[in-house]
Image 1 (cartoon, rainbow, N blue to C red):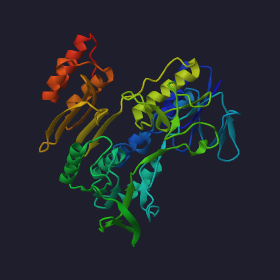
Image 2: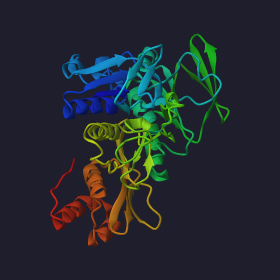
Image 3: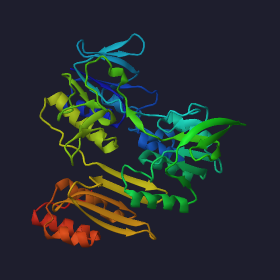
Image 4: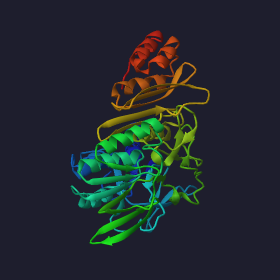
Length: 422
């Protein structure tokens, strides 16, 4: 049995290792589009800061890890898939035949369609190659403009601040990290950054980037302001890598459409990670949940079903984000934005940058978000994931949301559940 995996990120690597575990006699080939060994994009900021060398981003630290496990890593890019012939065509004339195929091609950072976005000195921060270029220009005191203050943008922001650059952040939305914060929480993160000396422009967009001579760039905003920069970084979003599937017959929406067993619309073809439109735990809907824990779980479940048949359904992952923005920890879990007809409990201390928001459906916690209050992280996730009925504790949390740990203990004891906080 030949299992081919297109993609060498967390989903692909975890799948490859589990394929070997579940079927020791199979052949496993993993296609890596980049020339670097399989690495984690989430580790790139640590490389930018200087906490780790480039090799520290590698998903497996032993250079012989994949060889020792009998996993063949082939550095090549897939150009198309023929699901009738069961072949993956590579750039050039080569092709690979497969018995089972896993598509784990992840996502690609995109640049906004503005004049000058392809100039030298304007980069994404998505690959190790991007990171090398950024390090060359992001010296202490250099003027850096970061376009985008979403989750990925704020991770990059943290690394840039550590490099002591003169940083300006430009975000089109009216608040920072808008996909995991409400207006109150997002504005508090902005205020925190401003207090740290990071200029943050929300409800602002870049209209044009031009060369300003001597290696400098000139950035014009929609408000008419012109900013000088040594470096511009785009963190304005990503898209799933599905273009090579045109003509394959594999159904693609925002990502590759999969069923509960991670199989695509074509037999023997599976998808996992940032390219897969998988099940969300809270809603039951299917969408791309581009976070590394989901990618890792997708890879494991896809591998199980590829080897053992469709015995292991994917029940869905809790949507969760944990973010460090220059020392301020923010989190969001599940349906943090609330549900129709639901109830909300809020604690807010703007002066001390502490915030806690709980969202309920009847007496069940379905979503939560926090800022500067890390003691509740495990409890929020646990209550949401178990779907525990809180009973009288729902009203207590409405009055004082900081009593989460007490509510979790009471819930676990009433249901005779083991206590887990990780």
